[in-house]
Each structure stands twice: as structure tokens, then as C-alpha cells.
Length: 146
Image 1 (cartoon, rainbow, N blue to C red):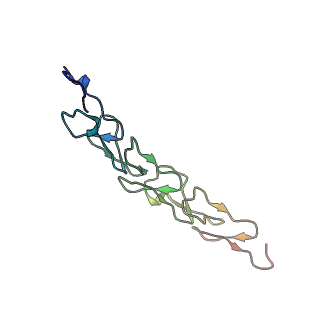
Image 2 (tube, helix red, strand yellow):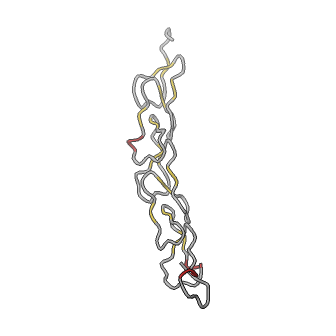
Image 3 (tube, one colour):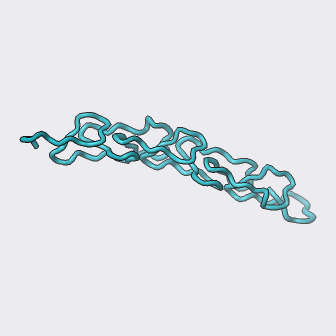
């Protein structure tokens, strides 16, 4: 908190540093003592410290007032994450705020996921198949079969 008032009689003259910033300075008389939180952390208004983003969340830029949930198809097992990691190709996740890689599930036989960060697995097209889990592509049916 800081105050620009002269002759203040109580702490109601003290103003909060904005959300996304903090100040450790007691007796501050300017908002310039309010410092941006680093990426991977956040603060509410009037904070004396920033808090790290929890697993499954992130903040990619400094000055965040909250952390964002990792979107579906991604996860973050780190505290103070600045981004989320994609589920591997052959896996998917429909969950938001996934906090560990094990929440990325294998595509089932008959389905595949060619790209990292998938939120669903795609059925093999007619004339194609896959018998194994965690497939990144489907195989063509043999000549003479469909």
C-alpha cells in the first residue's frame, strides 16, 4: 500500500497497489513502489507479495492478477508455470486445469491423434484401421480388403 496524502490521520488514506503488482515498502508515498508480479505468479490488489500459479494453471506475462487454467489438451505439473505442455500425439485430454501428464489419455484402437495437444481422438476413416492404443495415424486396409 502507499499514500500520496499529506497529513493523513489513519490508514484509509493508504491506497492499494493494483492487482498484478505488490509492494514490500512500508511508508511508501508513490505507486512507483508497486512492482509487477513475474510471469508464473499473480496477486490481488494490495498485495505485499505475489503468489505462484498452482499446478494446472499458468501466467505467461508479468503483472497477472490471476492465473489461467491450462486448456484442454495440455497440462502443467509445475508450480509457477509460465505455459502449459501439450499432451503427446497419440494422446488426448478434454480436461481443463490438468496438473499432470497422466491426465493425457491414450487414444483407443480405431482412433488416432496425429498432433500434440489434442482434445479428442479421431476415428480412422473408412478403408483404414489401427489396432494399438496411442496411435498417431491409421493404416490402410490391405489390397483386396475394405
